[in-house]
Length: 230
Image 1: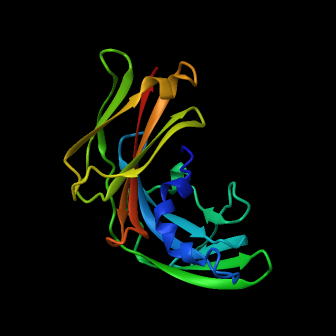
Image 2 (image 1 turned 135 degrees about the horizontal axis):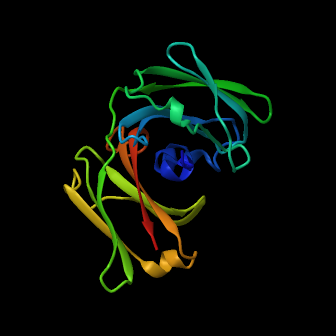
């Protein structure tokens, strides 16, 4: 499974803590759980719960307890303890969406203080968009990706990877209509990509569905991928 890099993917929902960054030094965290949908190697849509915890004060550990009592320790990948999240393995994606309910988050901060938070998972899911085309333009200057937008999607974001290296990132965007138009298309200058050398480039398209029109906490996301040789 490719690196989700969820902190970039879901940065929008962290705005609720923005006012706390300079105004307080007390330990506080924001938690979110949402459903991620992908298509597996066989083309079947599968689902997994994603957990994301963020704080402006460093955290030492985060343990999630599911509604049924199962526990999961989240990982901190690269920012020194400010954000923890999980990256499901292939086997953890199932053909049925996760059961809704209340998840509990035990957060231990660097100073030893422990706090518990909760967040609810709804049954709502977001199907992956079908990427209909990924081609170079006739003049060879651009690469165009087209897809059939899922009508319940609030926004899409796009990143391009070459191997394990991210070479392009387009933050969450919409076409100005709600819901998005049935078919969307975006072009990238070839020079933005091929400076990384010839080879296989993977376009990763992520759809975002937020809990409310405040566009803060996520309800569900979905990811579609397609390769092209450049």
